Image (cartoon, rainbow, N blue to C red; front, side, top):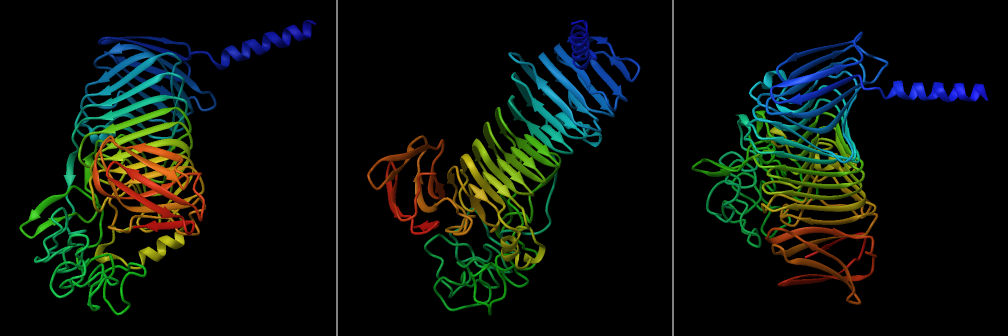
Length: 543
């Protein structure tokens, strides 16, 4: 009996030590109160409401409790080992630089205590050289968790919401991220991009008498849809020197096709005798989609690659991966070029509710993007809703070559296994709901409804092999703001209804639900539009 009591006492003692609070920091206006239990391996300095903590703990997880309010406060934590930051009714604003600046060498967990609302704000981020240009800045992995609420507000120019040099994991938390400032230090791209040298690109795409267009030296204008078969004059082709048709449109083969000299290769889209491909002629390259600006009298061009900034106002950025496993995550950006969520090496949306509205890409990655069960609404006002550049892409000087084939070899860039994926781009052609630069999309489950103009009739799509759940590309849906889009089966039973908060006259929408079956007939209805279609195979295009 005594032995059991001793064990119980030792267990309680160990439990208490494991969860002891090492440091408590109470912010109170322009000052703080610090209670410090662990002192041998932890150094704490205070300057007004700015607290600097240096921990040499390696085996012990340092715990820091933050509470109180300050309009000019900050925690700078430099930790050799793991750390846990608990927020309990914290309202902390920094007038310059990250209010939570983590120079961590191992993972830090940031937790909002159950039943509490916590707010972190930054007013200015001029000290970008010292990596403080975010509300939360972290050197190593961070995990955001807890049953409470965390509001991350970046109001200053050049300020991101969350910036991590490694991986970001989000679980359970209700996380609200908003950036309102402008980008700092635009680095202009030198050469054309979509428009090509002397290129006329968007938005004035119906002038077929001028040089320019999708790509190519003196490349044809993009032209209006339905009028792309005029190969007898400059313009109205996707590019190539002095115009030329797309290749499979009407008109005799000419130099060009999608690109121009030194152009890329668009698979199965142009005659093998043509020069070019999608890439576009000298100094063109597809590039990326930056801000549209009238740079010359020759028309609009889109820079070869997205604009780069000394300080951007992205919502969540990780140099590694972003993983959302549960909780409710809302991200809003307001500046041109400001993406919502960016994971350089990949993004995994495994669960929870994820709602992103951004001016630039709502969700962007240089790696694969996985939708594994989260309910996602990704909306961009001026670019792609979801953009994966895995396996290459358009951004190739002199157009690049064979990237379409290469992306196919690299495998799917966007993989959807479950959940709900609403990916909406409201800007019009060429931006898409799901964009992966001609790499395939793989769909094995879940519900998907995209809105976007795409590359005319060619948005990023699955193949018959990668559409393991039957999927349709419906071209020409008339999206009207706040008017439902209905999907019915052959018996008139409603399968789904989606309401989009903006209008788009002609959407190329990728649609799938677990109810779809090959060989069955379905109908998509909007207020003034109706399309009936049969799923003839795993992936079906409906015009």
